[in-house]
Image (tube, rainbow, N blue to C red; front, side):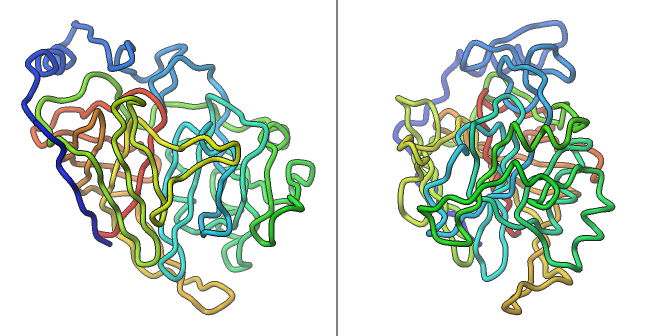
Length: 327
């Protein structure tokens, strides 16, 4: 995979932003983020540990979402707290959306789970995972994983087919019914993210593109919207109600992507995306890019992001996209 950046105009560091970032790191001091929120801390009541925004403490529902061209536009993806993008067979991409703060009426189209999802989701405790199915060899691993597996056969009332879409891109989920089938799903908890003022420095940036072998994501900064607008394969990404998708924070996380022991029905090898360990990342926020280091010691731990100096790297409050790219 490759990425291409295009610097924005100007680039002078604003003294007030640097001062705010310094204050945010001092013990006993407080600071407010770009949306007026204080940095999120573990267990802070009334604040989502996934977005840094005021939110109820809701159960965690992860949904595996199709992302080939016939599957677009998506439904309900703009309500997710977190959007993970990962590589699947034939160099395509697929999305794992994590919901907790909000539950849209419908989400989709829903597709099958992958082995990589099991490691990624362990940091959430025991969440619910909705998916369309999985190859038979993977089912024992899903059954042994610390999550509530919700394929259609386990939660039939939660799924429906959209007659206006071609199969297999027409399976949709009703999140409220899915969670009713997993009443003991864990609620949102700290997974290592921190929110607050941006760190000093960074590189002014208008646009950043991440390329998978057969897919492309472009994030374009919109100062008016205060978020990175998403394009997929050269086309603006929108929801089924016409809204443009975007997020205040985008993380491009360099990870190990290697062949797994599984293949799809056409014989293509399923990639395995390893999300434990450590490596480099690029954090996009407020029209700037920031070099970062990520660390996740084990599957049961969350993922921390730090500056080159080793200080926590705050995200902007709101939805976070994490694009998992091969080193």
